[in-house]
Length: 247
Image 1: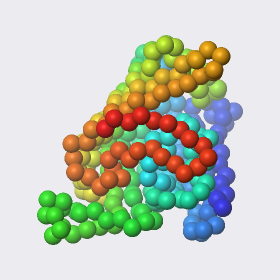
Image 2: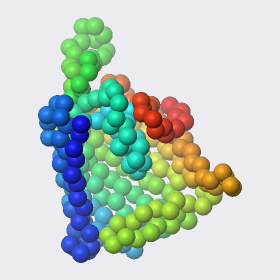
Image 3: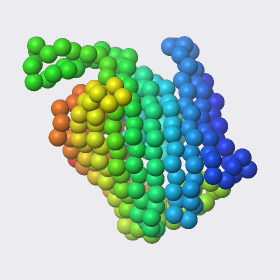
């Protein structure tokens, strides 16, 4: 059983500063999990924000927050059932995001993460040596992220110092992301490049309701452990979420 308590400040606390976080505890591993984040909202008109977050939690390969996105109900139900592919992650991230014009936004971030698996895992530190290479069972990564997002005619509902998207009309949301890993920077173990292009759209199906699709294309011209590539989204719960992935 996992118990978790979280919070987020609202505009009554401050119109620009936003604090959020949580504390969780699992009765199996008896470890505390936690997260803290502090953001500063520079502008609502051109939605400009910077922040820092620190997190220590248990995740699952193929079911991380960045893969699932904003589907919080599905993410909650991934905590049920057989918790295979689990690992502890410690993460520190600085980020800055800006929307210079309506429908176009940019985000840059510097992130350091650790990967401490709870299953049998090893990788070769020098894969070019083959079986003669030393092996490790955990790693750290430090990487820079640049992301641009194009969402023409996207509308939002403003909720104090937060906003909720109502999606776009007739045109998919296009997101391009580039990640650059740095070896020996803040303890990072890998130099790498990673490119991701994603299209997402939700649309009406008449009396049947609504549907949505996500198409993603990923390319990594670097030799990396499998968890750092593009693990396919999957789960072992009663809830499903579907994705077509071309990699």
